Image 1: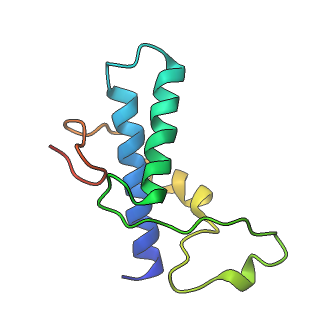
Image 2 (image 1 turned 45 degrees about the horizontal axis):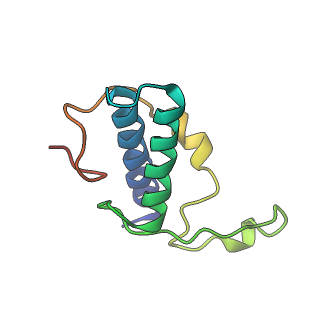
Length: 102
């Protein structure tokens, strides 16, 4: 899988998390939904409860960011890619696992 494909797959998983927490009627407050969303994103990075692999997360200073680029590194432009393909359409039903819909 190419780096661009890996990025797209990761962002799609995050979109599914956003859509799930935006439409889940159980949390009664915005704070509870945001906490759920953050938990889902962190679980994705940890490789837990997801169809995606875990990811290495480590601090990088801006001077060495360009040197870190490897064929497996998906970081660097995720924040810009996020808005480019955002559809905002909720899933048909809440995913039981990130990346799959029930």
